[in-house]
Amino acid sequence: MNKTLWRNALDYINPYIPGKSIEDVKKEYQLDKVVRLASNENPQGPSRDVVKAIQKSLNQLNLYPDSTAKNLREKLAIFYNISREEIMTTNGADNAITLLISSYVNEGDEVVYSTPTFPAYRSTTILMGGIPVEVPVTEDWCFDLNAMYERITDKTKLVIICNPNNPTGTIVSKENLVDFLDKVPNHVQVIVDEAYAEYIDDKDYLTGIQLFKENYPLITVRTFSKFYGLAGLRVGYVVAKRDILEPVLRIREPFATNRIAIDAAIAALDDREYGKTHLKETREGKNYLSKELGSLGFEVFPSHTNFLFVHLKMDSLKLFKKLLPYGLIIRPCAPWGLSEYARITIGIKKENELFIKTLQKEIPNHIKI
Ligand SMILES: Cc1ncc(COP(=O)(O)O)c(C=O)c1O
Image: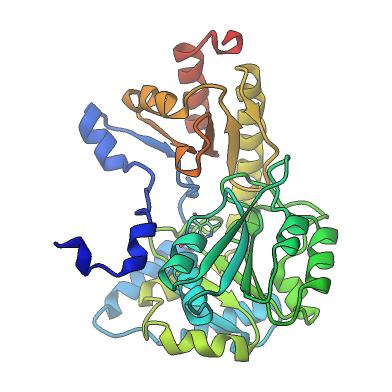
């Protein structure tokens, strides 16, 4: 197709590069089993109750879902002790981010965030004719709220805080966040993207939802993709005041959250035990991987998520390719301009051990590089 027919902004948007697919690696290397430690998925899969709810839901696939996802919003409202009017469900958090930026950003509006971070902030801002104002993260890879504040102008429409941040796994402290929110001008709308919030066990972390309940006028984006193991279903949600959700609801697809996703998410919220085991195993896996990767000479940064941000001190694409024949997929950070860094999802015990054993075999002398 003739590119001149494309919308102009698309010249400035790179296609999203997903983690390499398990099926492709199986086929390419003729493997029965492939472990993907690249996409921050929950390796345990959803709870059994969720699977049962999904099976039940299959009987009604001929029927459109409830467009407002009232039952799920009701469940979330009870979970957080907020009003269901303050919740909007979406087709994954990605969809939430696209909808929010699309409903708030006019041509020439500025959107401020730190980099490296989740790529959707940039692409949708550009699509809407907005201007991404990208502020480098701090030396310890945290969103730099002070520097972001300095970049706010009369043209700033949105500030996006990825907390914890993908790919660096860092959080902004309670104190820094509150200080920022207290001084941000009224013409600026703040969004916090909390895709990994459920993994955090740090007294210094304050969620957007807690702050919202203290009357801070912010927008929080959440997902069932990570902690609840439902990445394949695509279900996310936004928490904000009703008047803030109003424009977003005007452009949201009428059935953004599908029937199975709604039923599964409700069952996921009901199964409180499942999350406990997953958190424990993630914590143990994170400790194990951090220690072993450290022994191999890699620099591993403290992470508040289900993945590790690692300085490999070698070309991450080369390592990525070396690992594929073993059925291991990691995420090189080259798309963020960090060619020596990788993002590695915490797998289950067996997967983590396979990864470490393979590295010990493939790059035993790495420490001396
Ligand atoms: C920070 C962040 N926000 C949003 C998303 C999108 O999540 P979802 O699967 O709900 O679209 C991701 C997924 O990796 C993420 O890392």
